[in-house]
Image 1 (cartoon, rainbow, N blue to C red):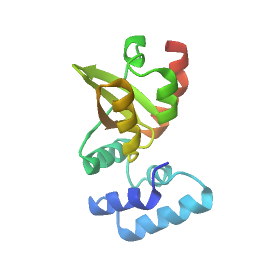
Image 2: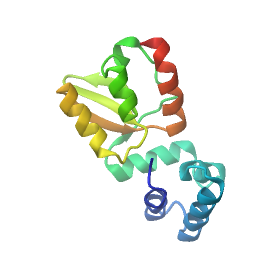
Image 3: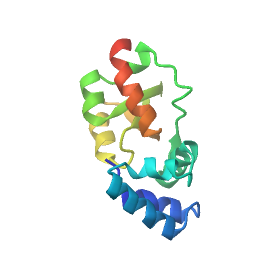
Length: 144
């Protein structure tokens, strides 16, 4: 799970929200037990697209538009189902020896390292909306 304080600090650093808004989101996240990204979007401080773009920018990677993602068995087979579930990984494409992967927690660098080791391929982490990642993870069983 993403660190809520780290997430809000990213958007404060980008100048997209104020420190006061960040604190309010953190408090609401704790009080309602909602992920901070949901609070940020639900309150209208950022859109889902801005959220994924901001995280990607802060992590030095790209965001993936999972609304436009076409799940194919070939892409999903790039990562065995058990490994994908274990690491919250959704393969979204490949080029050469590199697999492009959206992770449920883009801050979990160990997941990318584990996949790199297990698959003997380069892993390029990407950022996608967690809600869309979760929906995609749930529906991959039928496609695999």
